[in-house]
Length: 505
Image (cartoon, rainbow, N blue to C red; front, side):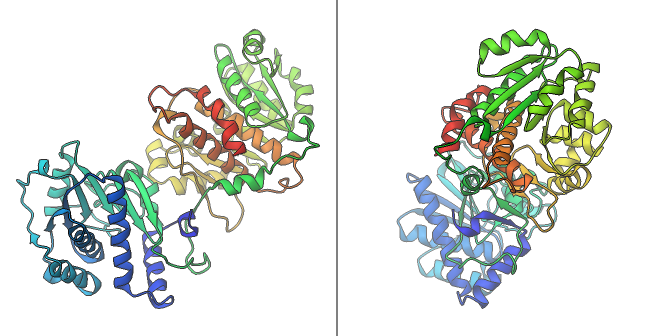
């Protein structure tokens, strides 16, 4: 992972990175454009090696310039290239005009858009129509082309240059209509629109190339997000010393499993064990104890009749995982209040978040793990509003409740309250994880990582949001490993077999 790929920027900030590369690092603008074309051509040739018939769609500006470079390289490498210009090439300026001139010199020809174009005679379409500057609804010929691409045969691959046409580079909003790409090749700096909103659904796989630009300090151009990487996990959970013992790796207490919900507490408890906690206790309805112990005897399971039965368990716990299958009846409410009064570090999920929404509190030592629906209840806004402004929602959650917040969903976001700290982005996970019990597994993982960091002198002072991000990364990465054989039919407990590899590799 290159240094520039570890951050996510606003589109205007990527333009500033371009300027610095050209004016301060001395890389000519056309050289950058040529590198972008080469990177895209190489990505297409690698992924679609059998594609011989290329259709390149060029609009205006530098995005079109990239398209002309790609088309020229395809011609030079023997592909059958058809280029359609949606804006007259004679109107191009600067580097884009040079790219068009070089394309023509290589024998390339330009055609106009024809609504009757037969896409059955195409192997790959290159979308170099519009870049990150689009801020209004797509219309006219561009919208007609986008709609035509939506009807393409399944055999036709679409590759977007920098960002799919019609996608807002800042928010990931679809501006009326957008190209749904199979592959997007992005340059210089990754854009927010690729990871927020509907961006992930329209970008397909994302390949990033920094075009050989020397790393640019965040003090020069501040990113909006940082990407969590395995190296950060290793700093939090270093290789264990030979003299280690279970008492050093934390005691997690899972509180949950109301009537009919034993599985949620069991999943959270086993996830904590599989993630390295030294000891895990489960406080649940008495009727659940035999099934949980029979299924996972390593868990210390306790039947809880009244909240006073928790006292000894709370005293021994390093971290409390509160909420999996908890419910919202009187039993649940009494346990919830008793747990909060213990003053221990906590991870809150599921019904614990719903109870918190009824009576908001703010603490610095807990981690909240809401999905968008739970976030909407915590903030008192519609779920659609949470999803439309995930960064703003994340900021509101941390400001209101403190601690660390994991806003789940595709492109999970994690933040805390440290001044100047960037939120984390988790670039892992898959749709197969949209199934019952996945949140319970994340709760257990988070509590275990938290407990181990508290017991390790190397990690005891780590920010709570970094701990939360490490857990979210583990959860998502284990999910990706579990989905190698297919996403549909993946279940939460499938992650258990993968967690050890993710933790120890």
